[in-house]
Amino acid sequence: MSTIAERWQAVRARVDEACVRAGRDPKAVTIVAVSKTHPAAAVREAAAAGATDFGENYAQELVAKRPACGDVRWHFIGRLQRNKAKLVAGQVALVHAVDSVELAQELAKRAAGVLQPILISVNVAGEDTKGGVTPDAAIALARALVTVDGVRLDGLMTMPPPSDDPEASRPAFDALRGLRDRIAQDLGRSLPVLSMGMSGDFEVAIACGATHVRIGTAIFGSRSA
Image 1 (cartoon, rainbow, N blue to C red):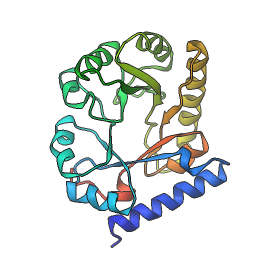
Image 2 (image 1 turned 45 degrees about the vertical axis):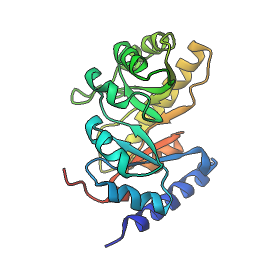
Image 3 (image 1 turned 30 degrees about the vertical axis):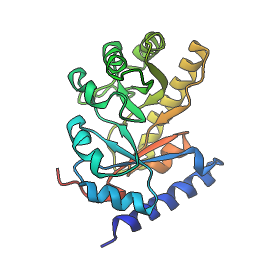
Image 4 (image 1 turned 90 degrees about the horizontal axis):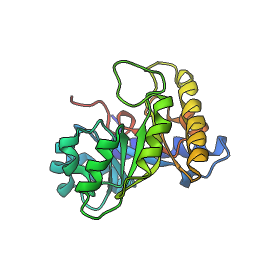
């Protein structure tokens, strides 16, 4: 069985190769190693192998794990309840799934003077089982978020419908990139981040312009929960 370090190196190589195929600089793509449900020891092993950015889905797990993981960058990638914003605000490099002005305001309030970068979570496919705003609502939300002091809107994120075929995710990825470009033009400012792509489809996401890919299973193996 491959070790976490070996799987990390394999993922790093695949990301680099996908960037080359897309004519992109590999340094332009951040691998967010999704460590939810995995112990701090697994994070430390991945970090020793070269991983720098880690993603957690649950605020309380992030709080419990951070002190034991050393000097790494954390991302919060799950749906965040407003009453848990205090556990995340000012503690992570990026909050990937903001879906309301109220959540952004709570993050700003709890960040204690630290500017908190955020992304809008967009439910591109309109799935009932997933959070995020519709593409149409994302435009209005972006206009509102840029008026909230204490947060900085950096871009968009999405999670396409599950499929065994990586190419099935391409329409969602293309749609998110197009939406990002429209919102950036509407706001008259850059939105550099596109968080999209996971273990099964990150190479397609990179071809479509992803700047952050969220990879868990391919690095850490199957989750315990």
